[in-house]
Every structure is written in structure tokens, then in C-alpha cells.
Amino acid sequence: MPQKKKYDCIVIGSGAGGAPFAWRLALKGMDVLLLEAGPRYDPYKDYALDKVDWETKGFPYRTRIKYAFGDSQTLDNKYNNIKSWNKASGTLNRSDKRKYLEYQMVSGVGGTTLHFQGEAHRLHPSAFRMRTLFGVAEDWPIGYDDLEPYYLEVEKIIGVAGPSGIPSRKRSEPYPLPAHKLSYASQVIENGCKKLGVELLPNSVAILSQAYRDTAPCNYCNGCAWGCPRKDKGTVDVTFVPLAEKSGRCEIVTNAFARRIEVEKKRGVKRAKGVFYYDKSGKEHFVEGAYVAVACGAVETPRLLLNSGINQNGLVGKNFMETTYYLAVAFHPKRLDAYRGIPIDSVIWKWNEPNSKQGSHGGFRLFPTAGSAVGPVNYALRYYDGWGEEFVKNAEKWFGHAMAIGGIGEFLPNKDTFVTVDEKVKDQFDVPVAKIQSFLGESELKTLDFMAKTSKEILKASGADEIVEEFSTYDFFNASHVFGTCRMGKDPAKSVVGSDLRSHEIGNLFVTDASVFPSSGGGDAPSLTIEALSLRAADLLADKIKKG
Image 1 (cartoon, one colour):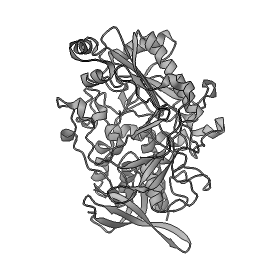
Image 2 (cartoon, rainbow, N blue to C red; image 1 turned 30 degrees about the vertical axis):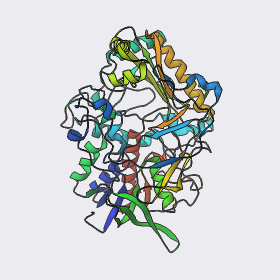
Image 3 (cartoon, rainbow, N blue to C red; image 1 turned 90 degrees about the vertical axis):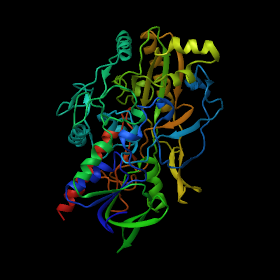
């Protein structure tokens, strides 16, 4: 239960968008309440990487947010070459419709950073100008230079390890930590890249390469997605949350599901009065706030706003952008043990800049990864078809030989892709759930096709013998990065929030997550940009309050 009835600011969601915003306002003297729908995880006790059966456990979700899906897209047969399959099971989607798998989010203190793979990318400068350059998506009302000092600050707080430079992203200071060395498997792929004239650079990641923030460096277990039990990954719960609590002005209430934002109208002006939320037992509470910030992600944020009747211009939930993803796994004659290291230690940035010469306007990046080949269980389930002694011999013979190339690309907004609420489907609190509908456009299909062809060329040049698995978002919705449902912009008729992340409709309401992205970027991981945007928005708000 909150200790007060009214706060200077209520922040809903404690992930990459909420906790930095809460910390900065608390640091500037405001009393902040941080409401989190999920629990607080204890890295030393809750994650299973030190257990014998770690591979079968996955991330220990305690609270799962319910959601629904809309219509399914009919698959275009000319792209059947990128259908998902593996050697053990064959084709994974045998229908003529794209299937919805899941939206990969974590509800808990720290949000989805709890199971992210640590990637910490600055958005490519051209990604801020997609409308100007290509007439697609929308321009951001701010540019790279506006975020550069905040990028730098966040990198220091979370402990980013990176190379001397990444193409097109100018830096005012070096990364706080040196880049991780490439794993043996990535070195083999690096040689393959050189044969094709492609540069592979160390990745920038919020994974400690040296001791930092009183924490030992990474032990290279490759288990980031299971939750880091050592605190060497820069998740929000071990970086911004402790800073917020240390301020003495930020109170965190867990298992507090925000049902509705109370809006009142005085003298013709709308303002958010406070938040109704349910505790774990289902009891409803109300708390007042002079300001309210929503940071629940690009699916749950529009759900909350729509359930609160906040959608004056009809754009809340529109312009949804999901993850354009491809993965190819192959066997190499040599044992590479690709699971040793960090999940994505290097990146090919060659095609990251938006460029219509590639057949689509959006950019993408490719990267070596262990993919699904992180342990013997996944090897057995995915790469061998059979039973008995022969099956065991094959598993023993080929374990450690898998290598993979993954790719993530731009997703452009389209009219058939959006988030709304489903009045017929309710959660445990009898609240309508978010309904996701996503259709790939021709740009995404061309990007997936190009990523698939290029990934296979790199694997072949690296000495791979046999492709044993392909997975892509051509035939499955399986989103980890989602954006755009509360787009930022200068024009209130075309956007939900302004450049300061303040709602055009309600002056004391903010949205501080990836919902505000006008474009998704060429495969860049979004958490660093979310955190930078949140700090900037908090500074702008605090400055305006100071000026009266």
C-alpha cells in the first residue's frame, strides 16, 4: 500500500521507460510513486541457471499479462522459402495463415529488461527521418543530437561495453567499458564475413566486461534470457531502481495492476487526477498524482489509455510496429560451442541504415548467435528426428557444432497492424485485455527474404555444412521489440504525445516507453533509447515546474 494519498508523480511500470523517469524526478525533489503490476525478483534466488534442469525452466514468470489476437494474415507463397522449420519437426506452421505465438514481455520490477540479451544500441541518425528520406513511417520531432548526452549518461549508469565506434553514431565520449572479445564461434563467422567483404564489429551491450558498479564481470554463461543471477547484466532492477530508492523520494508498490487513469475536466481542460489499481488480492485502490506517467510498453500502454477513455484523436493503439526477425542455424564440421559467451557478441551493421537500394526502405542488422543451441535439450528437440541408440549417438556427435546467424529489421506502420482492447476477453480483474493484430507489409517481407539469403551465404562462407533450422516472423508473430502505439510528434492531429512525451490531450499525462517511437529503427535494440528518452522527458518536466 502507498504511504501517501497523493504524490507529485505516479509512474505506471518499472521497466526501461518507467524507472529512469521516476528516478530523475525523485532526484529533483519530487515525491514519486512507482506502480508495478508484477513482483520483485531476487536475482540470487529466483533464476535457475545454477540448477541442473535450467534449460527446461526458462524465465520464472510469476505474473503473466493476458492478451488476445486479431485477424491472421494470409501467407504469400512466393516467400515460402523463409518458412519456419527444423530438422526434427519439419515445417512448424503448416497452415496458409500467419500464426500468433506470443508477445515476449516480463511483468516485474525491471520490466522486460529482466530477460533481455543486454544489447544497448543507439538509434541510427537516419532512422529519426524516415518520412523525410523515404516518405514512410514518420519523422521524430527530435534528432540524434538531442539524445546523445542522455545516451552517454545511460551507458554509464548501466555499464555498457562497446567498441571504439559503431558506424554513423558519433560519440562525445568512449563507452565506459571495453568491448567483449568475440567467442570462438563468432571468430569463425568473422572469417566467413571477411571472405564476403563484410565487417563484423563487437556489439555494444549492457553486460559487464570488467568489474563495474561494485559488480563482477560476466561469466559468459549465455543465459541472459533466463535472468541474470550475478547482476552483471544492466537490467533496470539493478541499475535505475536502486538509484530511485536511494533518493528517498521514490516509493515502489509491486503487484499493483493499474486498471484506469481517472480523468477530470475543469474549465474545459482535461487533467489526470490519479490512478485506480488492483492489489494482488483483487482489492481496488485509488491514489492521486499531480502528474501521471505511463510506461507499460507498446501493448499495455494503449490498453490502459483506451480503458481509461483517453483517445481524443483516435490514434492510441495505431501505428503498431513489431519485430521483423529471422534466424538460421547450421552445423559446422568443427565443434564450436557457440553457447559459450554472451548471446550476441558482435553485429554486422552494413545494412542497418535505412536505404531503398536494398529493395525496402527499412534497414536491418545481422549477428552471430547461439540461437536455440544453448544446451543438450534444445539440440535433442530441434535437430534430430528419431529414437533410441542412433538418436543418442547423433546428439553426442553433433552437440556443440551448431552455429547461427540472426537478423532484426525495420517494421513500417500499416493500417492493418494495431493494438486495441477486446471487450469480450477480460483478465482476472474483469478488465478488457489488449488485442494485437499484426500484418507484414511488402517491405518487411523483402527484408526477411534478404536477411535469409545473406545469413545463409555467411554461414556457408564460414564453413557450415548443413542448415538444420530456420525461424522467421514471416509465418509467426513472436515479438520482443514493439513500438509506436502512442506516436510522438509536433502535430496533435497526427500524434499522441509531443517531443517532451507529454500527452497532447491531457497536459499532466506522459508516455515514457517505446509506444512513442515514430519508427522502429533498422534492428536496433530499443531499451537504451527508451531510457534516454525517459531521462530527457523528466528533465524537461522538472525544468518547466521549476520555472513555474
